[in-house]
Amino acid sequence: MSKTYNGSCLCGGIRFSVSGFSEKAANCYCSMCRKFHGAAFGSLVGVRGLQWLSGEQLLKEFVASNGTIRTFCSECGSSLGFRVKGSTHDEIELAISTFDDDIPVKLDAQIYTLYKANWCHLDPKLPVFTEGREG
Image 1 (cartoon, rainbow, N blue to C red):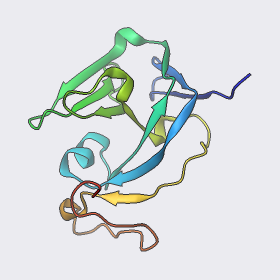
Image 2: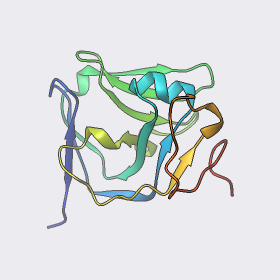
Image 3: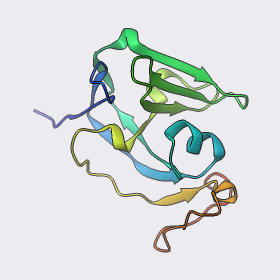
Image 4: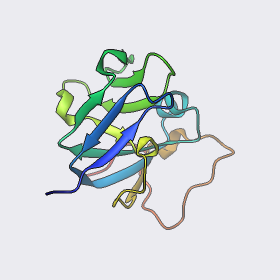
């Protein structure tokens, strides 16, 4: 039996599980992630085998001016995920903070740092990209 990792929104109305993670996980400092997460940055990771266990009717999407799609809970407002324009629902990156327990993921980059808040300090141990990942 393979391991699954569970998560939820703040109110618990939406529950999900995944079977694995992308090797890439990043802190994103763009202004949209900062506003969406209500924080200095959003920490996101791509997932495999996403299953919505409950509350799928509570999922809402917001399409930003640049075409990115942000998924959130319509009941409590929790920021759940992010997709790039033209991607499928299976290509979502989930907010790491929505998982119920620690997950086997290590952040490997800080992206869109050109847009970080002036009061926020970057982690000197992680690679910095002023825009998205290069290459």
